[in-house]
Length: 248
Length: 258
Image (cartoon, rainbow over the protein chains, first blue to last red):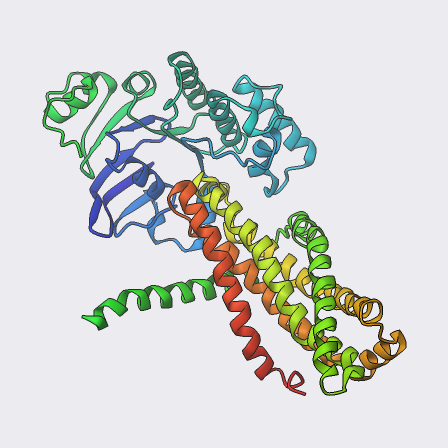
């Protein structure tokens, strides 16, 4: 379980996170939704330890990662996998080398075991025959699927998806949604997704949390969020320009 | 207030210096921590060292040649042109080749380090390294540091030899000096410490180029413009450090003032 308590973060004079409280249950898919600039990516980077908060805590299975030293943090990161919005594939490596990257330094991983894992992971995302290709040769959807394959090859306990459907056509977005559901169920992992794609959020989420002005203002199931009376949340999920949300 | 106006740049400067020292320390310590990235070191030895040979060759042969030419005509005014070989040998090995090799590598390698690492930063590849439990300093900086600390003195030694040969070529073919006279003057005047002091400087220059290029790459912000800015800053800062520190090395090294 991941518990985020009273998380605050500012950059210069700009307050990005202003007391985020959120509990992410093990084995569930929790989606954090919010508009552009609402602090979703900053919150994400805190959860995996890429950023340190000004105050507050993040407990991962009872251990506060905000107070961990560098060595312990690298150990904790082993539990996580992060699928970046852009894919963040290493462009100097082939697809196969990208997928192998996270496994190379692990104890007990022989070359044969790595080769099998590459084949299996790329097969799971439907791209079994592209191990030799370079990231520059792939489409946006393929890059996202390779990024997912690269993460699942390491068998993490928690996978975080940063805007997994952004920039994709509706069909490819649905393929990614199905992939997230399949990976979460097959591997029995915890998934955390940040998105502003409501079609995706409704389809994949066990729980949806709404981030607005640096705070979680509502949490609930997909149906619960659909039926909310909160005016801010309603404006966001209905995608209306008029309403209480301040656009900068 | 002028004092307040100075406060921020001074604060930034001290902060940057501190971060560079910390990065150097981390990169150095992580060299010895397993797993060793031998393949990466080998790759940088080739890309940044071996592939720099043509440019160092050209720089050295022409620097040696022009120095021989200028020295011959300068010394001739005092009837001392026989000492052309001495002047060429000592000044090339002690000062010119180590500094010019450093500057050439600052332009070629420091720029490529900051551009490559900077691009990795803005495309989140450096964050991705962290999420795979890989320390970005160990993976990106330490192998570059090892490679340049090895290759810069080696390229300097190569440059020393080529530049003296370039000087000899010009001295004998252009100003028709006796080749045996040139050789004997070089060997009589040149001491082992002249070459060694240049190589010690080269080790420091290699370290500077690797760290400064990597540091400004890791600090890149703001997309393509940020990568461009990081690259320019890395080349300027490493070149300035090489030029300024050369003076202090010459003062500090006990055998370089002889």
